Length: 147
Image (tube, rainbow, N blue to C red; front, side, top):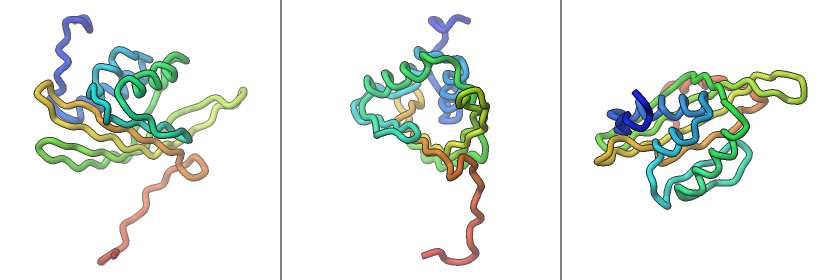
């Protein structure tokens, strides 16, 4: 089925998130643009960069990144909160980056948010920040009351 005849309806936030990471792996800006809500309040923060607001600006930022080629990402430690109309995930993105001639494994601490619309689930937020020293470790929750 071609992308032109494929329905753009994401039945779950997991489907939308999977499409997000597939778009990164395939350097597919059209697929990336399709999964975001077309709204002035969507937001994206790339590691080490300023917050980007608005659909057109977010799309342009991904076009610049994906213009350099595919971005293979493995996701780890996914946690989620979901209500009938809002879903938020927290996960670790694992990437191999080239710094000069050296390949380095980098972990990004990421959060994604999705809302349910009449057209299915759409992404409204992606934030990523480099893990301390590039490696993420899951912190254990202390027993008892935290606050």
